[in-house]
Amino acid sequence: MPAGGEADDRTPDQPAPSFSDAMAAAARRSGLGHVRPGEAPSGRALLAAVGGIRGLVESILPPLLFLVVFTITQQLVPSVLAPLGLAVVFIAARVVMRQPVMTAVVGALGVGVSAGLALLSGRASDNFLPGLIINVVLLVAMLLSIAVRRPLIGVMAGLLTGDTVWRADPAKARVALIATVLWAVLPAVRLAVEVPLYLADDAAGLATMKLLLGIPPYAIVLWVTWLLIRSAWTGAVDAEASESA
Image (cartoon, rainbow, N blue to C red):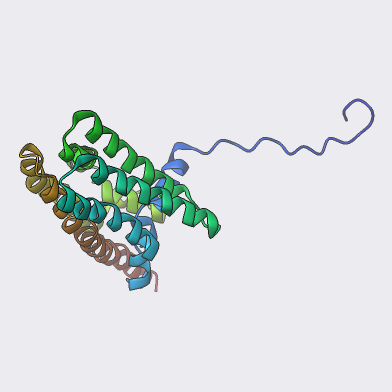
């Protein structure tokens, strides 16, 4: 008992989360985290995985606004500042509606970095350089995970389900490999299309391709991944249930 005879009502420090717990939490926050491997596919879950209606609007409108302004004015400054102003409006709208602002803040930071690079270089196409870098990182991560026989999508599915021995199941390992290859193909296609446009300083073309190769193929790959992972994971559960019956 502390001095003065008063009881100490402080709670003991909570243990720090383990690395696996932190990785599992990160997986749950990802797009795949909204489409759990054991659940039946649904449009609502897929919509949540791509950010919901608000997330779609906040993802699509900035590059669309850039394309419209740049096509009309052919001027760098208004073309990059207009999406930045729109991103600030998104944050303000979330604050007014008392909704979480972190997603909008991260989006605004991304738009701000892109605008800053374009303004510093004087090239409108540099507005899309961060996106190209992100796709390179995603592609390398997927390929490396395949090379070391730890397909990243399988790792995420294992974290989401608590399945630490999924690689011992040939069906799960095969599906994880196929799904990871799909997620490597997506950034590879984006880079194959967008890098030549970037080198040609075709900002309008980059904005168009960002819209076409953004949410639509992402949602398709996510949906196919969900079906693949669900078939393997629920199939294993059904097999175990049959054996125990």
